[in-house]
Image (cartoon, rainbow, N blue to C red):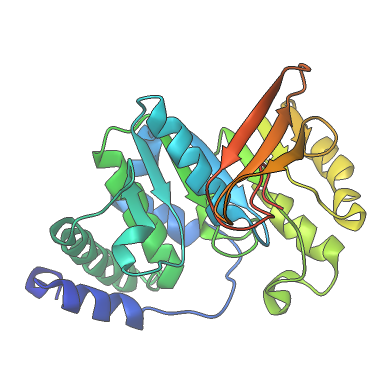
Length: 277
C-alpha cells in the first residue's frame, strides 16, 4: 500500500485511521521502529522538550520566533494543528510540504507492515507522528528541535528522546483517565521528561502539590543540571498596557539580576507571558 499512496488526501485518510486511546508504557516498539529506519533521532541537534497542561503551544511559538530571529534553522513539532496537519511538522516557521508529507506517510505504511510481520504490532496515532517528525527533522539539517509532548511526559512516545532542555509550563488536571486523579500523580507523569542528561529544566508557576514531587525525582535521577522556575529564579511583571488587546508590556528579570524593560508580547491573552501561565 505504501507505494500506492500518491495523494495528500489518501495520506491524511490513512493517518486518521491509525488511532489509539490507550497510553502504552514502554518504548521497545518505538526503539525497534527507529532501528528499522536507521536511528534518525541520533543525528538531531539540540532538543528542547515541552510538557505541561497549558502553555506548551505558546511557549513553543515564542522559542521558534526567538531562534529564527537569531538565524537558526528550527524544527518544531506540535499538536494539534489549527488549519492543516502539515502545521505539526514545521521547519523555520514553514509547514511541511504536501509532497514530503505523502512521502513520509508511505514510509510509515511500509514501516507498520514490517512491524506487523515481525509481531511487534503497528505504531498508532501519535507514535507515527513522532517517527515522521524524527525522519523529517533528520533530513533538514537543523540547529535546534522544539518537541511538544503529546500526553503527560513519562510514557509519551516523544520521551524516547534524550532532550538537552526540558520545559514544564503548567500542571493542572488534564487527561486524568491516563495520568492520574491528583496533581501529584499528574506531576510525576509530566516531570518524566527530566532525565539525568537533561542540562536545564525550566518551570512555569506550578502548584505546590506538584512541586513537592520534584526533589525526590531529581535525586533518584541523579540530576546534575540546572532548574529555573518562574517567580523564583526569574520574574515577569506587567509594566503598562499597550494599545488594543494584542500587546502587553512586561519587565523580565533574569537570575543574574539583569532585566529588560518594555518587553512586548503581541499574542492575545493576559496569561501569555514568559513561562506559560
